[in-house]
Length: 219
Image 1 (cartoon, rainbow, N blue to C red):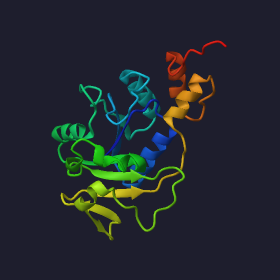
Image 2: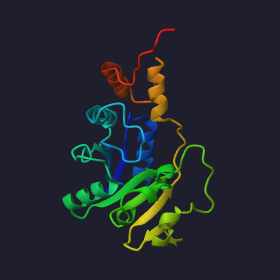
Image 3: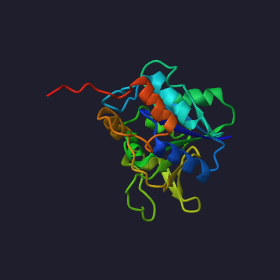
Image 4: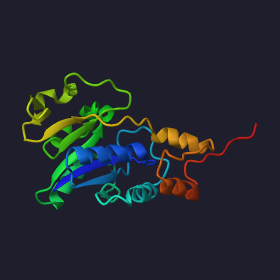
């Protein structure tokens, strides 16, 4: 089974997340994509404004209509910071013969040299690195971060970078959808509409729970 792993804070999940996952699923013929909300994101200075349970529920609502999208709560069930290498090791121990594809944005991938035991991660899964909105098309192919270049060689036939363990890094150009969770939170805090930025079920949940609102001091 070919399984995509889409990690993130999802505070909240939005249409750009969902479209990225769908295009990766289709491009690489993935059998399923697991959305993996982080309990304590190790690389974010500010922690999520909503609780892990609330973020998991928003993901659950957002993907409910897709037969090949599933929620994975492995990081929410584990104490401490949500390190990718720990998650991949745990998933590998649980599964048999499953091939994992870690879906990640180009900006986050460029900082992978700062991740915990990042050299070990590449032996545990393939990577699908998606383009960022507004980025120019790479010619002929994006370079790898300096920290990992020595671990890979480029294979022209597959148009991918091969790790010494046999896994690959693929780069995928996806539809540009410039939506960010931080802007959505700002919209909610300012009392502005988030319709068409998030699925309607997620919008309703945010309103029901009063997420991302802030008290405005009278002038």
